[in-house]
Structures are given as structure tokens and as C-alpha cells.
Length: 226
Ligand SMILES: Nc1ncnc2c1ncn2[C@@H]1O[C@H](COP(=O)(O)OP(=O)(O)OP(=O)(O)O)[C@@H](O)[C@H]1O
Ligand SMILES: [Mg+2]
Image (cartoon, rainbow, N blue to C red; front, top):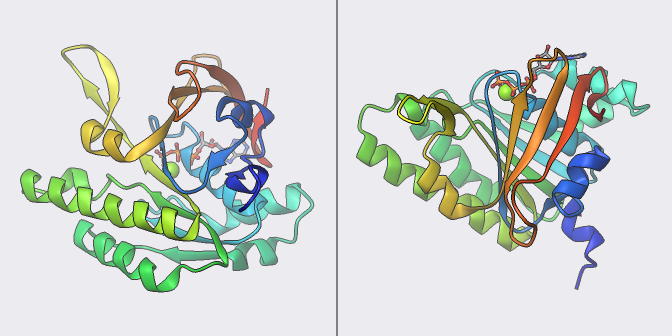
């Protein structure tokens, strides 16, 4: 059996690691959600670049930047080309294609992988006209991702967008219920009024109390503690 150390992927931020009970858990789905420019993509790329093992990265929003990844790598004294080689990038153009790629991962992912990222799982979903069919398809995709997480004991990060709930006047995650059932750990990122400073809030965790938060900033290195 692997040690508990191997069961977690470090985020590279001491604060966020502690919030998550040591890092991102393997074997389950972790949801990271928040408004645009809150740091979701940076955090997911950083977890991939800092940990051993290959990364399957499904980019649905053209948010993944090899240039940015290389800067993050070299700022940390890592070889940018070697880091880039670890990432296997997929760019589905619609929700159905996204589903096909996730299904294909069953044949692609193996022991060499430590992380799968879907960034974001809901960008294509939210423009689906048939909401009922879309919701069923979303559940299916999450089911496959969960299967991958458990079978290969890898971390799966599902990035999610927000919408404005005008009744309660708050930002809520898209498809909150569907994702909530499958994602046992949920991290919310937020931008603050003070420029440059952001917060990560633990909304849900398998064994940690909810509601804890830490400050972080985005730099050339990626995500750093304040
Ligand atoms: N080298 C850098 N130094 C400081 N900040 C940076 C640097 N590179 C990018 N940023 C900042 O990071 C933020 C974007 O972060 P990121 O792309 O991770 O957000 P996101 O939550 O994925 O957003 P979206 O929902 O639009 O995909 C921007 O505010 C940008 O200014
Ligand atoms: Mg992004």
C-alpha cells in the first residue's frame, strides 16, 4: 500500500496544501471553481508541473498556455521543455467531443500519470441547448473521471466556472448539484479588492472542516503564499 505522502499531490503553496490536508487527494475528484482570472488554470498547471508523473490536460477554454507553463517552470529552476513534455494536451471543441476525449482517457491513462485536469468541465456544457441531455452527459463524464481516479489512484481536478445567482446575489458554481455529488473536495478561488491578493476557501473536504481559507498571490512562479 502506498504511504499517505504518495496519496497527495502538493500544490506548491504551503497554505493551500494545509487547507487541503496536505495536498490534492488521489483517487477522488477535486473541484476548483471561481470567477475568471482567479487563478484556477495557474493552480492546475502548477500542480501538474511540480509533481512526478504525466498530466492529461483537457483545455476547453484555450486557457492553457505553454509559454506561461515554461515561465513557471524556469522561475522554479526546472527545465521548461522537460516540464512541457509531461503534459498531454487535448482541446475539445464542444461538449460531445469533450465526452469522447474523457472516454478515450480510459485507454490512454496508465501508471505513468499522476493527474488529469478538465479545464473547465462546464464551458461547453453551459452552452448546450438541451439541458436535460447535457446534464446526463455531464454525469457520465464525471463517472468516467471518477473511474480513472480510482483505478489508477490519480488526482483528477475538475475546474468549474461560476454564474451570478440573482435571487441570493452570490456567485455559484455551475451544475452545483451534479458536480457536488461527485467532487468530494471543493476549493473556491476568489479575487479580492486589493489588487494581486486572492483567497482560496475550502468549501468541502472528505475529512477536513469546511470554511478554512488562505491568501495567495500569482507571480511568474505561479501560485505563491502571501
Ligand atoms: N507572470 C505573472 N505574474 C503575475 N500575475 C500573472 C502572471 N501571469 C498571469 N497572471 C495573472 O493570472 C491571472 C489569470 O490566472 P488564471 O488564468 O489561472 O485564472 P483562471 O481562474 O483560470 O481564469 P479563467 O476563468 O479566465 O480561465 C490573471 O489575472 C493574470 O494577470
Ligand atoms: Mg482558466
